[in-house]
Every structure is written in C-alpha cells, then in structure tokens.
Image 1 (tube, rainbow, N blue to C red):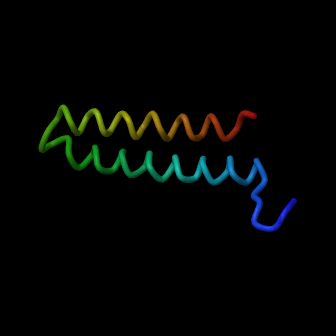
Image 2 (cartoon, rainbow, N blue to C red):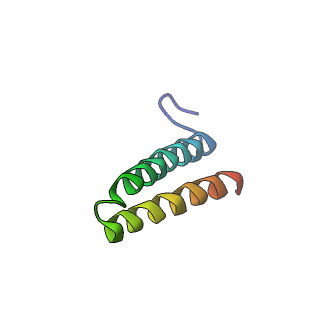
Length: 62
C-alpha cells in the first residue's frame, strides 16, 4: 500500500463512525426540538434513529 493510502476496511470504519456521530446528533437535536416544534423535531429525531441503526447494520456487513 502506498504512503497515505487508506485500506477499504479502515475507510468503511471511519464512515460508520461518522454516520453514528451524525445519527446521535440528530437524535439529540430532535429530542430537544420536539417540545418546540413537534413535526420538525420528530423528523430529525427519527432520521437520527434511522441513521444510528443503518450505521450499525452497515458496519457489520461486508
């Protein structure tokens, strides 16, 4: 492997971690927004939950 080149597994792992961070951010933001704007908060909340599950599932399959 050339210098600075990242393996496919490492790239996949980084993508999964980034997706989890985005998902948790959406989960928290949605939880905060639900009392203020139930529709927007609910959409962001469920998008975050979906992203967390998707990231977990995609990191375990190849």
